[in-house]
Length: 231
Image (cartoon, rainbow, N blue to C red):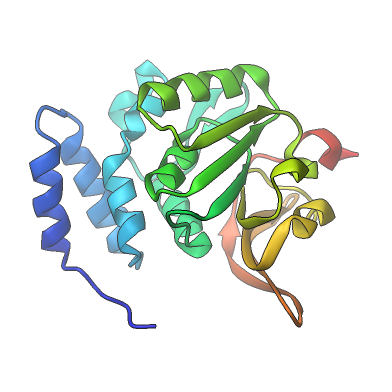
C-alpha cells in the first residue's frame, strides 16, 4: 500500500479555514504540531481528528486553559483524560475508518470517543461508571456525533450482541488481556490495550488465521480497569 504524506501546511490551511471564532484553535494547532506530528503520527485521518475535536469541552471548566497541554488531566470520579499524544497513538495503531465497527472499552471523558468518531467509524462505547457515561454522552451528542452507540456496563465482557469488531480499544488497564475481547475481534482485526498493574505497557494485538500476535508499543500509565477485571 502506498502511503500519501500530506504537508503539514495543508492541515494548517484547512484548519484555519474551519476554525474561525474558536478561541482555542491556536492552542489546538500548537498541540497537533508539537505533540502529535512532531512525534511521528502520520495517519492523516488521525491528525485531522485531533485538529477537529475540541479537547477543552471534555475537561472541567477550571482546567480548560490546560486542555491542550502535554499531559493527562483529572476529570473527576477518579478518571483522567489521556495525554493527547497517547490518544493519537492508540487511534493510529487501531486505524479506524468509515464503515469499520470499533468497540471502545471505557468511554471515560468521551475525548477518545470523539477522536474515533471523527474518522467515520461505527463506534460502540461502554463505560462502567454511570455518571461518567452520561456526562460523556451529553458532550458527544452536543457536539453532533451520531455514529456512536452507548452502553453503561462492564466492558471486561465486551459487547457480544454487536460483535465481531474490526477493532477494539481499551482505555483502562486490566492485569491481563480479557479473553472475551479477543473472542469478539474479527479475523485480521486489531486491539489496542494497556496491560499491567504497577508496570503497564501498551500492546497492539492482531488476530490472524495463524493465531494471535502481540506487539509491545510503549510504557504507559492508565487508570486500572474496574469491575470483573478486579476479581
